[in-house]
Length: 293
Image (tube, rainbow, N blue to C red):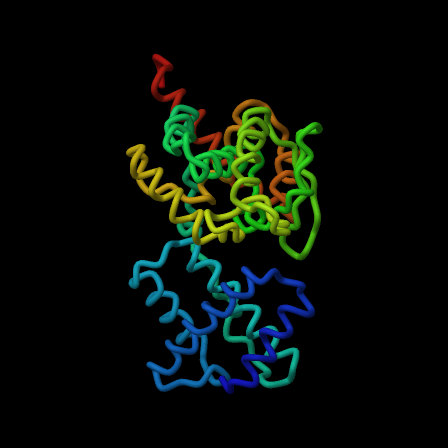
């Protein structure tokens, strides 16, 4: 696809769809995958056919890409061809009748309450960095924020007395999320460490590095993976804590609509994946303990 057409598509996503910078990065990566595949087949994006896209999907799976990432890539491809038709570059949509297999819709991974406790014990809270990492991990588990939302939090976004945080989610939509007492206490303990690090500099972000600069999602991601490995939990990611937050709420009786609002999902069907998780755990308990199971 011509470079200017690629830029037009990304500009359309940003302006018309109001997508966040992180989502834009994901779309661009997916687009590059498709362009690379088309080039390897001697095809142009504008002349690609349905059969080519089926081979593209197969190549994604064979490369070891996670099912969720494959499904997201296909969202990018569908939106690309809708844009190309809308702009009059093509007249036939090659994505028609291409369905994402149900088997791709794997259940999200999450931690048990005991595993969360083990993870939270890993940061060394006798250090400023440990206090920060403990506060960040407590906050993710307590609020279900996306990691990008958490690292973007400003000091003024946290209402310690009310136990609330205000964050800017996808599509620049603002929402207020309640935060548990454990996370609030962890933030309270971190604040003196933050003051020592920042000093007299004017830094708005709540979470900062040892140099006083804002923590990035990549920095925290790496730290969390290290903590997970040390706790012998395997590879723990920030999104896994978001899944854990939602799953634990539903297991303890929260209604789906409330969880949807806290997660910032625009469509409740996205939140419904967690009911599959809790239902599966109920079935597992039944099979394990019922004498006639």
